[in-house]
Length: 330
Image 1 (tube, rainbow, N blue to C red):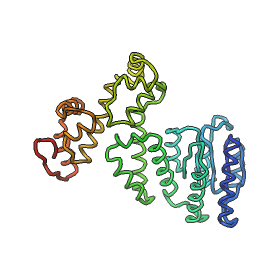
Image 2: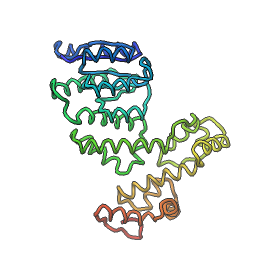
Image 3: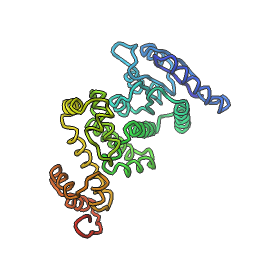
Image 4: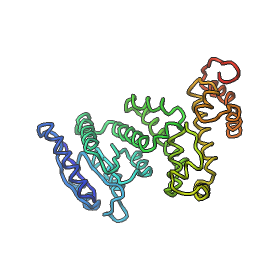
């Protein structure tokens, strides 16, 4: 029988976790998990845990209750003092910094509220299996971290689906991670990949931009193979062309069309490495009627023509590509 403690200032969420725990217990004929304690105060939680360590701790990020401390810092204390073996962090927002700190401290999982019942049951089932594997002894190195990292990668990808277009070898890396074992080498790949995802989000969709600029940027990012015009974006954002153009340049430090061009060139760079398509095909995919014009933009941005870049990357990989006629590909 595993013990659970819930530390959250949201009464409805505490009730939701308790329902999930009861469902697990019923499924396993009572041989599951039980609630040891619940509270909306990190200070009270820490006092209880120092006398009564638990197996699973649900801790809310951003929760008030301890002087200068929230649920994340409570979780860090619990890990340092070995008061809990399986920490599940919860948050009202998709907080990258909280996720990063959770990764470093070895959190088991990270959930963004509101949490669906099926997601909660899946986390509890996985935690139950994890605890059953390691028993009451020490936690296997890296296993909880791996599940947390994998869950966070999937969450970020779901929230920012356009990341697939700008992550170099993104799909290949994701396949390796999903199929990998929770070994230290795979965990290192997960951490590196998640860090790259965070950098890309900050680059293309920085914090603090207005809803208008955010709407325009998100439309561009989610429709990379469509021709986008200022008039179309203004209609989507329900503002006039002049206002959108001025606001976007002010907040993003570049014009809308420069933003579109930069994004398409990043996609082109990845396609040159991951496919053998002709430049004429790639130009058509990205909305350019002239592949030579596209090539000039690419060279201006990266210092190499598309063909030169493809050759360099092929050489770096130690591989070879079949050369195609007309200089359109390799």
